[in-house]
Length: 444
Image (cartoon, rainbow, N blue to C red; front, side, top):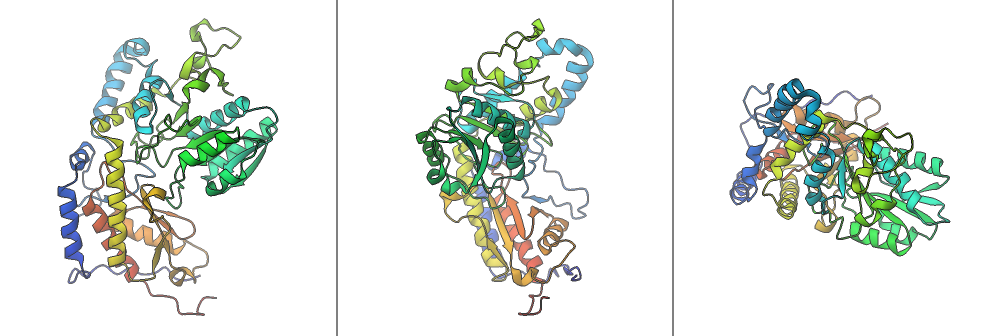
C-alpha cells in the first residue's frame, strides 16, 4: 500500500497565475448578484477550528444545507412555549396537526406544484416505498416490471427491488437516457433521479415523463438533488409522483422530514401501502376499518416529527422573495465560474469533470474525477481522492468524496458566493499541485 501523500502548507509567497484576475472577477460577479443579500439569512460564523477566523467555503449543500438564522429561535419557542407550556393543546392551538400539509404548500412552489399536492413527513426512503407501491396499484393490468434509473442512489434501487418482490413485478435497471426507448406496455412505472447524485447530470424530466405516459406507464421522480437548486415543474410536466429530502438545498437540517407529491388527478386513486391513523378520513374515530382521507392527506402515515418539521418550516423562510429561476441562473454561473477557475489553477490532467458542460444537462454540483496518474498506485486504505478531500476540508474548503475517485462540490446559490468558488478552486490547485504523478508502469 502506498504511503499517505504529504500536502505541504502553502508558502504564501506566491500566487497562481491569473489569481488576481479571477479574484477580481469574482468580486464583480458578487457585486452584481441579485441573491447576494440572501447569504446573510444563514449562519456564517467562523468555524471553531480556524485560527484565522475565516469561514469555511462550504460546498457540501448537496449533502446538508447550512443553518438558516431563524431556525434556532423558532425551535426554542416550540420547545419552551408550544411543548413546555401549551403541551398537547399545541396540536390545535399551534397548528401542529396541519403542519405536514402547510409545510408541503411552502415547498410546492419550489418544485412547480400547486397547493394541496405535497405532504411532508417520514424519510425519503419511506416516501419512495409509498410512491412505488401506490404507483403499481394504479398501473394498468398486465404490467410486469418497474424500470429503475441504472445510475440511481443505491437506496432507491433497494426499495424498488423490495417493492417489486411485494407486488410480483420485476425490476429492470435502465440508463435514464434510454428509458424512452426501453419502456413498454408491460412497464408499470419508472423511478428516476432528477439529478445524478454522483456526477451532477440533470436528467430530462419532461421528455422522460412524456415517453412513459405515451407507453401507459407512470413517472416517479426522486428530487433530492434538484429541489431548491433548479426549476422542476411537476404540475407543468404532468409528473405522477415525486419524492425528495429537505436537508440539502432546502436547508431543513439533519434528518429533516421528506415530502411526497401526488398529482392532483391521481390523489383519489392513490392507495398507500402504509395506511396510518394520520391518513384516515376520521383519524380520531379510531375505526378498526381504514378509510383514506381526501386529497394529499392520504399520503400521511403516523404522528409527524414535530420538532424537525417545524425547524424545516422556519428554514423555508429564507425563500421569501426568492424566485427559483434566479437561483438556477446563479447556479449555472457559479458552476461555470468554478470550472473556469479549476482550469486556471489545477495542473493539467490532474482532474476531469464528470459534470456535463451543457447547461441543459447540469444540476447544481460539480464532480471532478482524480486522474488515474495520481491514483493508480493506491491499493487499500483511503483512496487518494478521499485524502485530497480531507486535505481540502483541513484548509477550509468543504466538499465531499464518492468512491473511488470523485470529488463533489455542491453549489447552493442562496449562500454560495463567487468568491467562495474562486477560493475553492485555488485551494484545490494547491493541493493537487503538491502531488507527484505516478510514472508510467510504476503501479503494481
